[in-house]
Length: 401
Image 1 (tube, rainbow, N blue to C red):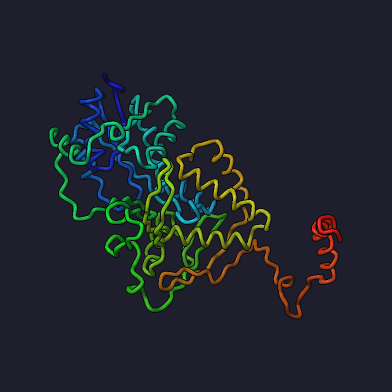
Image 2 (image 1 turned 45 degrees about the vertical axis):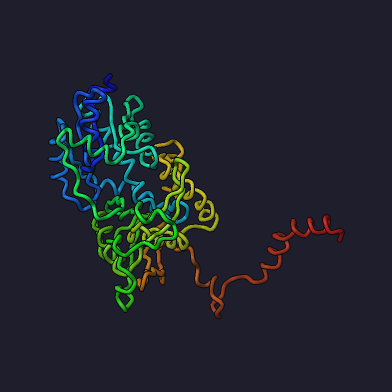
C-alpha cells in the first residue's frame, strides 16, 4: 500500500539513497520520486550524482548549491554562540542537516509532493535531525525513511539495487564512513570502532601530520564584525572564501583534528574523528575577542547558553522555540564583538597571541601595575569586608566564634 504519491528524497548518490528510489516505488507504491542533492561545498562533482538518480528511476533530479546560505545562516550563528558539543565537536556535520531539511521542504512545496524521504538508518543522529526539522518546518509532510525499515543487510541492499539496474559499487579498499562539507570531514567505522586504535594518517585529507608541517610558525589575523568573521590578514573575504582559505592555512600546520567518543542522540556512544581546521580556530578566536568586549557577567552567563545551543543543534532542534529564543540573546551579545585576533600556528597548535577592538573594555590604566595605575587601592578594603561578610557571619554561627 502506498504511503505517498510524490516524494522528494534527500540524495547523496550512495548505495542506500540510490536503492531508496526503486524501493519507494516498488515496495511502498510511490508514483514519483524527485531527488535532491545539496552542494554544501563538499568538493564533489554533482552532475554524475544527478544523472545517477535519473537512471535509478527518479522523475526529476535536483541539485541545490546552498554553500553560501550554509555559511551565513547556519555556520556564522554557531560561531557567534561558540558551539562545541561536549566541549569538543564544533558541529560541522550537524549544522548541515537543518539546511538540507529546509531544502527538502521547499522542494516538496514547490513540486506538490506530499512526503519527503531520506536514507538514514535507525542508529544514527541524522534521522533525528531530519525528521524533527521537517516536522518543525511543515508538520503536514510525511517523512519516509526506507533504510530505517527495510531490514536489509549491506549485501542484500546491493542485491536489491542490482535487480533494478543499480550498479554494484566497486569494492572499497577503505572501510571508513566519511561525510564532508565546506567545514570539514567526519570519519567513522572500520578499525576506528575500537577506541584504542590510533587513527591512521590515511584517513586525513585537510590537516597535515605534525611531521609534515612547516618548521616555522605562521601568524594569521582574523577580523570580526559583530561576531562574524569578515577578513583574514586584513583582506575582506566573502563567507565561503574565508572558510576555504582558513581551512588551507590552518590545516597546513596540522591544526583541526578531533578524536572523541561522543554521546549520540539515540543513547549509544560512537567514536568519531573530525577534521575542522577553520571552524575550530574561528570559535577559539571569536571566544577570545568576546573576553575583550563583553562584561564578565555576560560572558559567564553566555557559557551556559552556548552549551545548550550546541546540544540543540546536535539533537536536531535547530528550528525549536528554545533555539529561536536563544538566538535573540546571542544576537544582542554580539553588538560589540568586533575587532582582530592574532593567532600563531605551529606544529599542531593554534595559540592566540594578540587581540584588539575599538569596543575593548580592557582598561590599561586600571590593569597596569606601573606608575600609571589609576585603580583606587584603598577601595579594596571596604569591598572585601562587604563581599566576605556573609561568609564571616556563617563562620561565626557554625563554628561558635
